[in-house]
Amino acid sequence: MTNKTLLIPLLLLWANLQALEKKALPNDVRWVTQSKEYSSLCTQTYRLAEQTLLPKLKNAGPGDAIVMDLDETVLDNSKYQVERFRLNLGFTQESWSEWVVRREAGLVPGVKAFIEKVRMHRVKIVFLSNRMEYNLEPTRANLAKLGVLAKDDLFLLRRNKEDTKQVRREQILQGKGRMKKTGPLRVVAYFGDAMGDFPDEKEKWLGEKFFILPNPMYGKW
Image 1 (cartoon, rainbow, N blue to C red):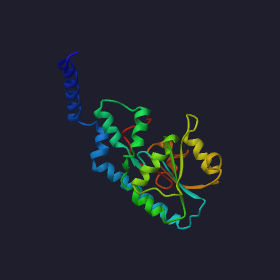
Image 2: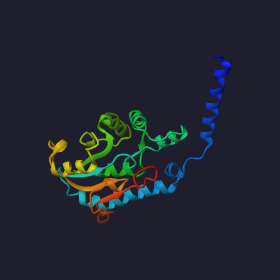
Image 3: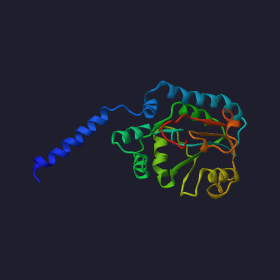
């Protein structure tokens, strides 16, 4: 095969990549990455949480906890979505793990100020996420890089298909499984970007105990 023959597919690939670079992002990703509405809604949610929860946390003890999802609740992974779109590819667990290991996620607007204020009280933060447990260390490193990690934070990442969020929520409340050493905790509030991040009777506690962040990029609807 001649150099000229090799050059043709490379030029075609380059042309395709250039076309994708110029192509407008999908509305869901563009809304998250470019709109003032997205950042304002996130900030509004965390400010509402501050106003609602901080007075209650004055009397919090070591047995109280706030349970937070990670992706699109604390960590902003929109860069991953942009990159996959530019490559004309969708989500894969392999590419997602590679992204997590890169430790390049940003912060959801408003979350850092909220966490800093929560840290002033005697309440544990439990990060309950469907990130796989083998990605715990890069996840911790990403949070530390962003200034939102404390040594006492607890992590309940997913081990396998059966290790659902509901299973792990029950471990938190009952002090069983991975929470046996810590003991049972009273959950003051839950934060997430999908209704599956919350226990039952969801609507009853919205804005009081359950706080939801906008995420149009992916989910089960």
